[in-house]
Image 1 (cartoon, rainbow, N blue to C red):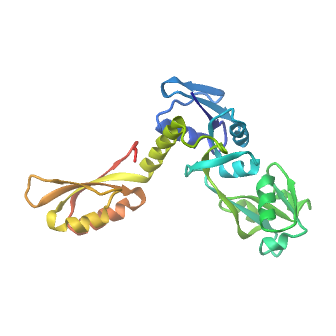
Image 2: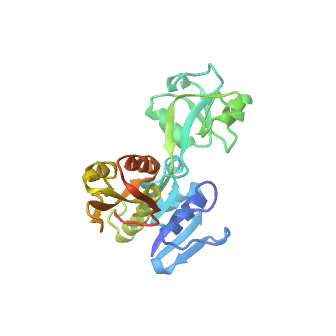
Image 3: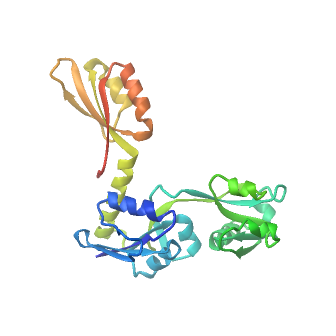
Length: 282
């Protein structure tokens, strides 16, 4: 039975469980449940603190887990990313009072406060910058006001809270994070149970990214239409009862669907429909 770690709370928890449900797995109904067995799919889910998941997976007690890329790197655990999941995206940046620093080289000899000591220490070391790093749990922007540090490193989304604290981001992003599937470094990459799990999640990712588009067009306009809707391998083409007309079916990126429909209509296509894709295998 495949043993999988799932975030039990925070911004990773809800989207992770939703994706697993879309992939056909049972998920807990109560937040107090710590373990859920899905015998039909031969999977056992363990609901754990997101920060702890990389540690459990690296120990070999659990086969794979879902956590944030930032939490994986910060943990220093012997685990590796095997599939990005596209949700819980964030950017990790340095911030300070205006005029304090312009880039990472200006941090030499200074103190950086952060909740992600592992990430920051590694980034500074990789950049050849000798600075002190102190660990704080939450509200790190207060560290500058209280004189504990001259610089902070934190997750930045809109930057509003930093501006409200009189701070500004500087330099290049330390890293960009999102939810990822991880496994122990050196684990069997061809484990069939793990591969099946990854195929299911990849199917959800594709289903969320594409729609199925159907339309009718004149045969003489088919090449133009196919250029607009090339699909993954190629579109499905079927002759219609009315001579000179064909029906076309193709997968189209969701973000482009409305524009593609406009362009198809402009070349004479009609009965243009889009349908959501709930699951797939490529």
